[in-house]
Image (cartoon, rainbow, N blue to C red):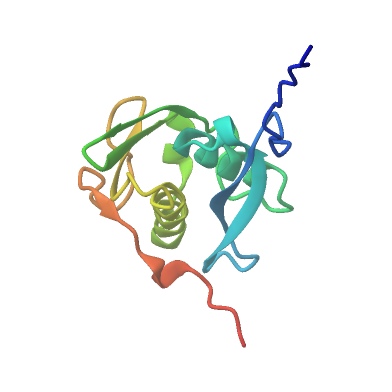
Length: 151
């Protein structure tokens, strides 16, 4: 009698949960520029909404938080390359051209790390932010706020 041996293909062990690197931006200590922060997250947590939430969470833990307390991202929708970021009303407490520009740069650069996002529209409770500048327009990535590292 012949014995039949079944050979199973050997598969490399794959971790149950793949991890991914999520990038968001934070203000520099002098609040004049922004810096990227990379964190490891589960693959399913690698979303644009989570990146903005991590940006806000990171700011909360800072010695001098920049984003007003109570600010949260209510929802984020992406349509045809445009992300519409709808925050709670506390975001309107950001005052001053430099602070407003920094918040815009942090958020836009965080969201445009995702290849399907090219532009960002800002909302607070569904309405344009009450900033000094025109907040009805769409914002594109602007890397001029990113602090260049000295080599």
